[in-house]
Length: 319
Image (cartoon, rainbow, N blue to C red):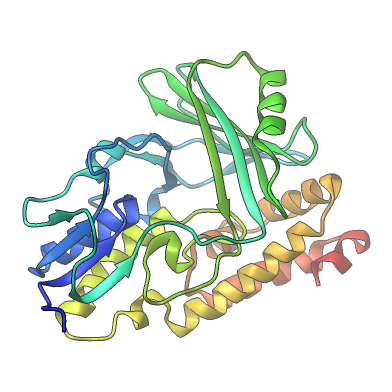
């Protein structure tokens, strides 16, 4: 029988894994993280809505002006931020870094998203610009892909050609060709690929637990929100699975996956029509669908409002 050395072992040293490890250490739990390359810097850009994040989240840049374009231009009344990777990467000395798992009272898999069939893919490049505005979605142009632009600070802006949802995901080369047709790329390239329909699990954390929003691809903010709650549950000798996937979150996740299936049925023009309807929603309904992980009522109201407003040619695909 293995000797239990740690209270918590987190397998995976990405943003979600390190957030959980830090939270557990802050609760006085004897914590270790398994990271075979602990000093490797993160090259991915992690964005989130500011109001989704804990107040102590390190921020690299923020946009108070956020726009989206479907058939028309829409101003979104929320602040969008890019997280500070270097600070998110830091760990206190009380956390032991391991090369392989060791016995613990609780072990969490935080190694990233499980394989799914529906994927979001993107290819981006960094350009010089003094813009401080974020364009969350710009559907003008390349049919079934949109442009995403976000300031990184220091006169640097990330521009990504993004395929929101496809089964399987759009190949990187096709996305790269579309992006290069819009602008001259720099030497910096960012590539994104993750499943939108990864299964839920309660013995994992972050994307590995299924935190990815099936209709948007976001997961890091949820991990940062839940990490302290999971650590507190462990400290109180409570089952953390009730924090990771409470009943209301399971219901909302199922509703969001239904929304994903609807998106996958839409062609390029119908997708633009859909997002025109979405961005015309009341801001609170937009927020409920994008960020209300346990907001069953708000999510249902948002989905119902879009269905009622949809023209006949679109409505039957949303069922």
